Image (cartoon, rainbow, N blue to C red; front, side):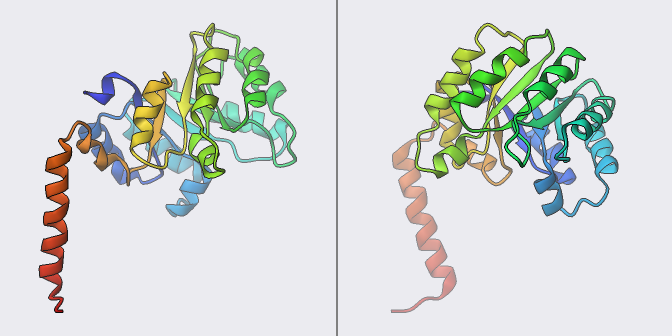
Length: 236
């Protein structure tokens, strides 16, 4: 199975040196980043980083996030980021830090033609309430944080399926499985009929195991344990 024919895989990070590798080896179809990833990568200048990343992704969709807590300033930042390129999606959190919903801002930006990636979505209520605010004929992404939902002990799949159902009449909106925890989440996202999944660089190499014979995989694992033990020089 060629998984790239089933779902769009987006790179998720802020390491500029990884972009060419991700495009060439894993055929990723887009990229996302956020202030947390950028801080972890040591990014000092937001706009300089954004412009450089935009050059490296070579026209693929790139999601860049606003970082203020006031909606007026979010709107200003969103318009500034949108001006960077036609392939930019502006990430707007579903609420600010005071739990105030972002729907009015999302609606204004959507009406102004700004391509949005609405992020940090966790609940069915948020999904349902978002639907009427992404009605304009402008491409958008709805990022449901499946991995973090799973971290609470809940099955995230029904939330993704709910989002697919709620947005089924909007051909411009794509549902994204965010924050995967294991490579099998790609299969779950495909089965849920998600359009996109973000995959961390640390997980992507495991994609080569899709379709691998389990007996062969078992033997490879035994050989790994054996070789590591021999190289270690352990004695009993």
